[in-house]
Image (cartoon, rainbow, N blue to C red):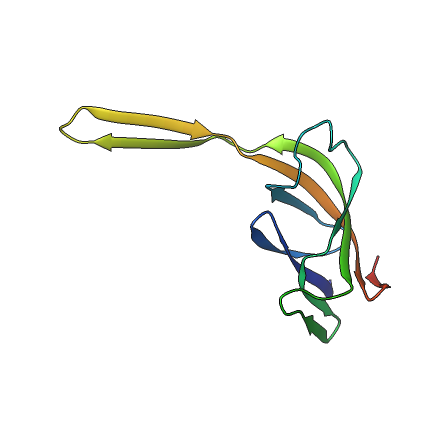
Length: 118
């Protein structure tokens, strides 16, 4: 696909294309009562848009650029285990946590009110 955007969400930068699925961590409110299936989202933190041979770069974000999408469902990622051990001291510590994440799909990319790709 020749149209893509680089967005900032969840503390990371993602390269998104219309019609593809992405897992977004640390989304605004990952509680199931707020995020049902097919919840529409608008992302305004767009760093760059590439459309055919034209590249638009923001400083730090592009004005008038919007990425529209939907949240399909929220879920927990696999458990990460942290194990700390000090040898010869009989000290062991085992921790673990699961991170909230949201599976989303990008529907379209807009720049200055004009849809670049649907």
